[in-house]
Length: 328
Image (cartoon, rainbow, N blue to C red):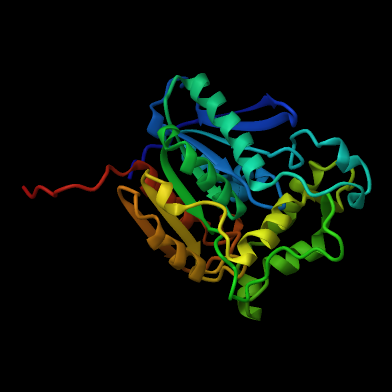
């Protein structure tokens, strides 16, 4: 794995996509570098409730995007419409029960596709690498299944898969599923620590990191006053109609690019059984790997052992395709 470390610069960009409006895009790259090969361009896709802020928050002085960019990569995250610093559709300015859920997985994949096209044109490359987290794994997989020619390598971190016949809790919304839901700090922290024993709860998140993240994500929602965050409910309806009904939203056999599936051993939201179930179904990937990482949950990128996640993904991004070994 490449060990050089370069100075890193950041930039905020945007992509306009009808009918959703402005999509916020964050870029990190080595200082002074503007040209990159396709295998050095990475786009991160966030999950169901929060935008991509966690990918570029400097916990302990370094973000995941810092780590990747310092190794010579051009990396991006996008906030889907209704999330993070992207434009919020008008139905989010009304009571949630006045409009149906929006931002379903195909819609999200279309937004990701617009950003992929933007980045490909910006860097003059034919392909990019994708890293999806949680619901982001369904989005990136849905996109890749129809656009293998635009994807260099695919990483699925904490993959979503069929929930029928299993007990893991999906996102729960009381009553009618409206346009969006609202979450607060206490409920978020409780969910983050779900399934851990008392010792694990104390040790898993370094002091101050959760508050650093919550302050950043809550600041992106102008209606929450730093106390709550709103999130579109399209993903909730997808969970009801597809994942919990035994009807996956994409066919793994349609993905024909190199693949990494990675999950934390203590993931309570998308447990390792999901990763182990879906991994054999990627029958057309030219090469693939399944990694279970010790001491991590669903949000391992913000936890004490996050470097294990960073190294595992980085090795996959940098390593050459497997082939016959030649011994000297």
